[in-house]
View 1 (cartoon, rainbow, N blue to C red):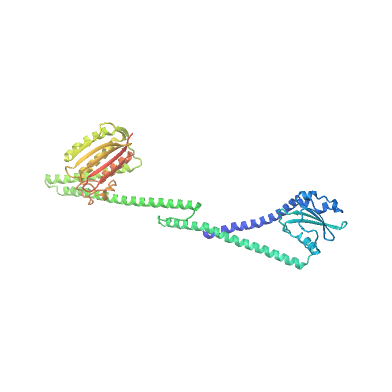
View 2 (cartoon, rainbow, N blue to C red):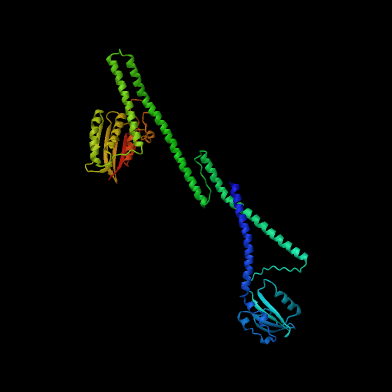
Length: 468
């Protein structure tokens, strides 16, 4: 890539190089044209010595020259300044032969601040000198005379050709150097971005690029880093999801294996020992029934959890008085709590608080919380259900003073198949899905469920639902 970009830059600068030569030629031709146009408007060309010359210098009209900032001097054949009007650059009344000769030579020099037009009048035997200040002048001219010595022409031509070749060589070298420098400023950040892209392709999602630039490459750097961050995050989530999926499959397999093994084992035992007493046969059938119910309960929980996970699943929301709904549900829970010798308190306000709720699903939440309470706490545990308003929300507290949950487990308690009994024994009979289902139902209502607990400090489930 670097070579290709460098070559492209060189080709571009080669084109600029050729255009520079054409531009130089065009400028030279244009300057010649401009010089012709400008020369016609210069004051020194409007009032030349040839136009003003008279045989008697006293008849010369000096007024237009003086009015335009110029000067007129007349020098006789004795090199005396016999007449002077306006601008005087001689600064003397008499010149020596050497001084006059030097003046004539200097008057033709280029780059002088004054422009002189000198003409000799053989009739009057005097020199007429017209002087104007030079405005701005750039003298570039090429002269060729075929009568000149061939050796001189060859030497001068060689010098010009050598200078032109040197100019082209220097311009070409500068073009190459500048193209390389310019290409590096492009290829270096591109190479860093390419290296980062290769790392991403090879699975290193921590790849980031730092170009230390403030141009368009900085925007590309930010876009690349944001993309890498998103890929890294999504990959981590995908890996976590995959781990959870594998764990769920293992948990389901473990939870189904025991009850199904019992069902199969005791069924075979019943078939093999048909002569057994009715009492033993009845015990076997009770075990079969119990484990069949466990398997059925787990499968039903999985079915409900899968439904709540589906994007197509929708709940039927109705505007209800949550106070009245909660009183009715608590009344339905009383027989269960009393049967298990649990104590209870209900703090529900008498006024109406309206929310949008699916009554069936909300009852499922409270039943799941109650089932979790009874399943993991000893007799005599106290349950308190409270309801209050907090800004735009209705808050339900489901609080007990039971054994609590260790903080390291509580932080993931709403994940599927999370249970306090790590051995996954069958004593509690829980599926590990009840709290997950309750949590997802509350989320479907646009609310939130949280937990405050620690070992031997009881549990408080906090359910927040938006009011209407």
